[in-house]
Length: 330
Image (cartoon, one colour):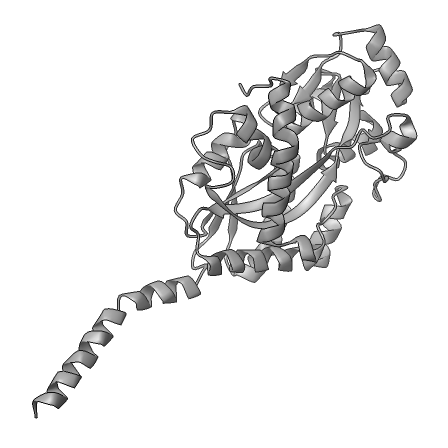
């Protein structure tokens, strides 16, 4: 008579031990149950902000929740990334960044976080070759004329950037090294404000993503001299490549991805990755990104593993260059 009672007790005890795990499993399976915040480390209106907003809109349908964009500016995006590094690993706080925030900042700043170890990669989503730009007041109409004018007026022109080590500055340094020109860089809190000053003639040069530049270039408010890539932009076929313009090999592309805090559950990462993949397969999202002169990574590269591999390769390529040039964040 005692044996059945003992079995019943053990069965009930085992069931009770499982109960606390049930809400956790159900919670993970229900992700997301509330809005998700994507933190962008740059000002509203810049290329990162613009493209992330398009991606977020495309992800909402798949996730069934709003995706809120929060701009946390400063220190070349590192303040915003730091907030995500300190956030709970539950998938509700994400870092939308790329080459600058998750590669270069690791070589520029004494960060309170590690750009690799403190994050879980979710997906790559876009890449953009930079354009060589000037204000409409610069007399040159092609690269040859621009280089000649800069050499005739050393240190007179000024170039806008997002700060030391930003893609705008690094691509500008590559331009200087290849052409033998000199000009100072003016730091801004984001590409949006810098572009406004280029249009207004407050600065003379920018090396910038098509996202931020093409609307002003098409309207004739700034000059576009060349694409820093092997191929012309489909949406702006009149702009020559650097090879065609006489600066062979001066390539620079600004890529973007999405990360979550370290220890975010794998099923949550998979859910977020699937939402990115769905968004990038949407014809409306693809056409809007293409209209901005952006390339979408192929489906096989829209994976956490591909993002991790590219980030590692870029760190190995750029960190020695930045450290050798003794560029420091401010």
